[in-house]
Length: 286
Image 1: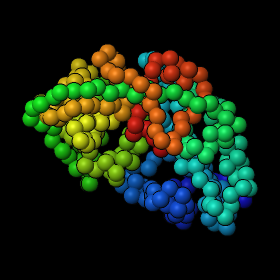
Image 2: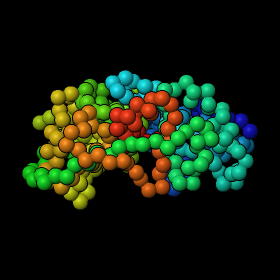
Image 3: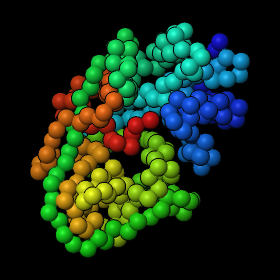
Image 4: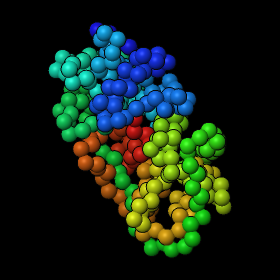
């Protein structure tokens, strides 16, 4: 038994990792992400390999956040999984102990776990964290000027990447230095959720359902507001944010919760995070 990491270019181990992810998470696969060039150094699986197969894993993802105006070194743990044939042998604990020096060197660490692990992660110094949700009821009517841009090829990816690089849009707790994680979503699950607003020269990742707009990301100039962006989507009854706004005035604020999904944190950075009423950006979940 050995713990390996940094193996994304090893086709055999990468395929084994993907097979275990598909088995554990109902079809989750990182191959397209890799083949499209988005799997970089920020996402690093730490896996136990037995007889050439990945049988257990904890991935460490670098997800730095700007908290209180200061960039913090933040790590996220994700893709935690063990082959059913190897469960009950302490493999997950072995990986957690192996990566502890890395976690100890960060300003903060977070993860999301289901209801079955609420007693597990506190053993490694984690505590339940608090995120805030931001929503606004609207009565907006008008023409939609936002133009949908499909993210199914290199042209769209290049344009969005350029917009991300030059963006100075202000939000409460942006993720920085990890554009590949955003592309994990927009190149696969959210191919139809990217929009360009010509009059603002703004790019937006947003989903609309039953009159409610959920805005995940905005890439634009600093003087553009969320309200400016929302107006470009025409008829709306409500808007919810997948991030904390730079200015919370006018927003309905509540504690953010998802069913069978628990937020765990450790590190001083998350004391300030909670005091400021922030949330992990919705596309910063690995």
